Length: 277
Image (cartoon, rainbow, N blue to C red; front, side, top):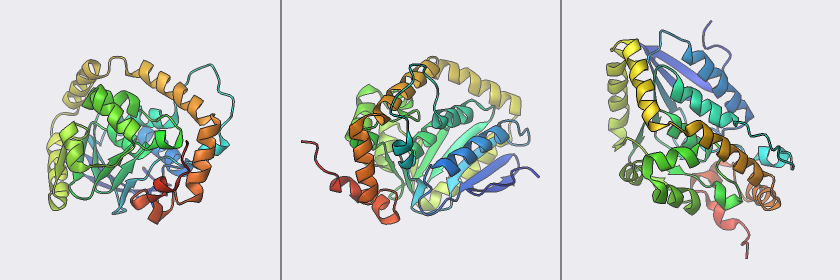
């Protein structure tokens, strides 16, 4: 049976559209479990000829994807290989970007770190006003974002605004994200689902080959050197993970509320981190 044995996803298929809902309580943490299922999901979707549009959403009202699991930082090797290689989150994003069908992120809660990067990799992103939140908080704990944002954000919002997002580590509302070009549109919460579903069904009603070829042509113009940039990002991120400061900051973040439901709602744990000076 197709799309079986998933613990973190729920599925609904309708007229060429796959509605994929993330359900990995309490915060949809992009940990080893969710990451491996994302990888499996992308491989299954890309070869499913019955699907022309994928809508990725969350069943948890407050979280799209909180961020990547910080526990992997402590377990990471302290010596970084000189051979550059892609990271799993990058490969997941690239599979969704490159598959010959349209991928749409529908965001009603928090999309931070790796969650934001998954959203950035989708072909389109729509978010709920007054509810959706976007952020890249990695630098605050001594890490370099390693899931694609250093390469995708400058292409979407420009260098200056990308650095504001990546180095400021602040939350961005859906309204501000739309203004910056981070997402396609910010819509009132009650209008988001009808809008996305209508668009998804409209696109899915068109010939599959035309969708695939148009997407491929657009990507050549938009992402000509993305693969090289992702390799650079992955290597710099690996170097940051191996750094003693990052190891200590991540351990401290986990002690003061990171990856807990209350701590992740407004990222209060960030203000509890020890000053670096």
